[in-house]
Length: 286
Image (cartoon, rainbow, N blue to C red; front, side, top):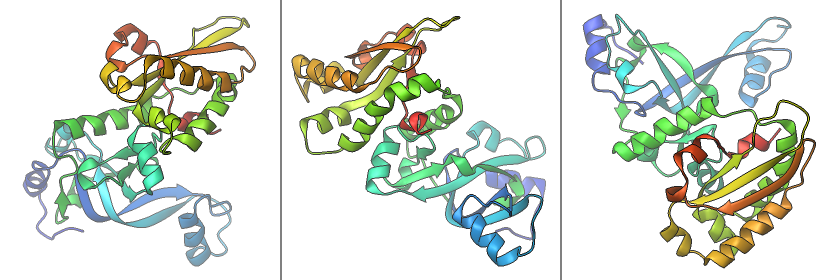
């Protein structure tokens, strides 16, 4: 975990070579939990074994991990610890094939891909925490991002985790049948499964309201390009499938109607993109 030869210069020497997304071999995550109601298997085991009789007040839970990930931006990692003494880290988890597929497509924003560590490697952003840079001295690292494209994917995934909106309850209920369909059919060896796998994002547009009037939701089903869309199905087949997905939605509350269309990301205007939100499946789980 460290070395006896510690100084500001030594810490700066170590962090100068680090990058956001780098993987640390071994490590621990730390969080606070309430002994009277532990909400994870780890905290339940910790309190059962070490805190018998403790009934009030939060207690620290420490979990051991095989791998951790540096999630602090590179520009802050490489700055002197005299100016920026802290970094953020999070556990690296290995997901199942199904969960990896969903998370890799941005539909499980809790998990952000670390592509250089393997197709099943993801940052668990729910367990991010802060350590001082001196903790990193003596640790072993490997590159988590091998090229600028992987670095960009990591940055975008971390940003989406904290920038995603809280969808209104009416919209959650309206889109829940679509969510269930996506989860059940994505990845399947069927035409619907192939169309879902070709979609990079589902964008949701819902105009703002100031009163109680009904609004119409518009869903953009977005393959990457027109070429990638055409490689999977004709325009008519896309239209038919999109209509079937839209028809599964059940307008609730102030949601008066739902419409949709297949629009490749390459054809989506910047304004339309900024005025819509990505439909990550975790949005609709409450």
